[in-house]
Image (cartoon, rainbow, N blue to C red):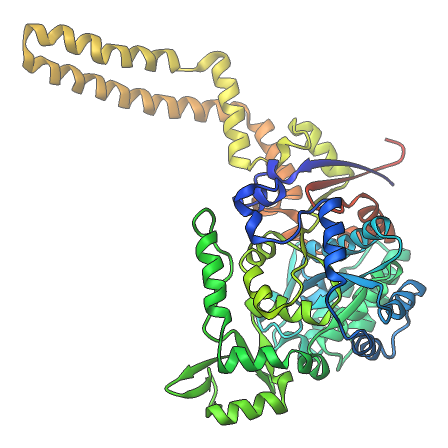
Length: 537
């Protein structure tokens, strides 16, 4: 199966916000909100700056090694794990919650992008090593988002009584049944199907945590690329973050700092992340709920848990692992424990990182280069043929369906059936006839304008009928456009936000990941189009 690629600048796709488009263009309006430009010069500056910050590499190595216990490691993973202990090794981080079966294609794109950028950084600084790390957001409790995935036209929805952080949940009977339903649909049979079936069974075996299941999936499928998986929900790592936990719960600073940056950002853009006076959740025994200070008492919402100020101070000292940072502080925690050069994130992540620079400066934590992750769309042979029949190239295919159809109708209409000349005539008559008959009788001016307005209304009705007739005549071409968009842009959204990696791995095997790695843009500024065609085409 031959793989052909093309690239479309992300700002030309219409699927990214003004902030993201301006960030990719290095617009001056945003320059004060980040530290490093995403180009070779900017990344070299990031490497030099990061060397001035310390990281407990031995602890990081120990935690990750322990989390991999019982798993078979590739040579690349083993080497990168050992590299973490040396002072000249830095990381490239991508992060996501532990969605079932990875949830969406972009989960995979993030990880592979981190590998590609790590290799690019090595070329910029051969004296240092760069290791890709995937940070599992295992403390996230958004089960509605994480507890389902799609495959073969079916939504697989996990029904469980478990609550709290999704990564801490375990594979139960309902999830085991769901995995069994999935396994029955995997195919066609072959090497990729057997490998995938084995990996899924190993990952989602009874009793495994969802965080561990996610690690097994990544290790089995992408371990050959050397990516390390970190679950930062660890008491030892949280203790490193204790000074921030203490201050942000007992004497919060983040709210005012982030508010200042967000207010400045809102002058031109829309701030992405919502922030609160206390930006920590309390994490314990199937519970992850916000902490609020109410009348000199710390309250854990939706629970009976209460702390006096003295009790809360003691709880922080004794159990820092029970304090889970929200979106505002998660990046700060992440960069406190990793020797990061760069963080790779999607459009919404790039947007909320623009709110955080002042917070990093306050806590004297390195603010990394923030890289827009690689976006991609994957087209198989049948979809490519449909694209060609629809008359769409790799740029125009990003146009939303309704707009494509309207453009098609307008082009056909302009050729022979346009009423534009008649509308122009009506417009001219408004002034010409109104002025003419006003000379005869001023009262006639209103009557003339009223009559012409009615005529214009009738012309508008006629215009809509003409559009419908043209659209009916173009039904085959419209159907081809719709058919293509349904496959490549489900629900008129990006494929990467709808599908999992499963069908593409079943079709192309490990080559799918290798192709993504080979063609990923290290800087994330180009939307990747992957086309798989039969070799005899």
